[in-house]
Length: 151
Image (cartoon, rainbow, N blue to C red; front, side, top):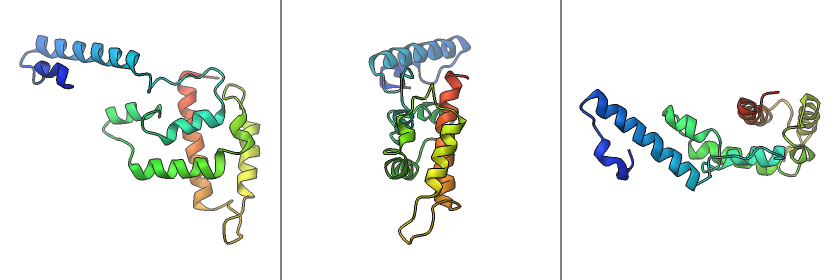
């Protein structure tokens, strides 16, 4: 409970617990209206803009839900996501497509382009653990988008 609602901590009766829950819900709604960090506008958002939201804990659509399940992001996960985004996704043409218009073919073309990139030692990125992790990261972002924008 936030400090403003400290008098609702440790309720002793069912009625007090219900009042506590309602107060917390109202508090969270008010906080959400004042600070739109968790609200993600999806109209005309590009793939790059959407995926970039997942590299910061303040803007990730998953952080609130995961924190509620006691599974917060680790700083290492966010750093890895940020590296994948900046290195492989940010400047790719795939990032410029609108989320509402992206389809399976666009993802397959991106995947092909990604697999043909070369690592520092000259080997292809395709088939490596990094390649798989980038695809998993993108799939996670698209699944999050699909939760509110089913197609």
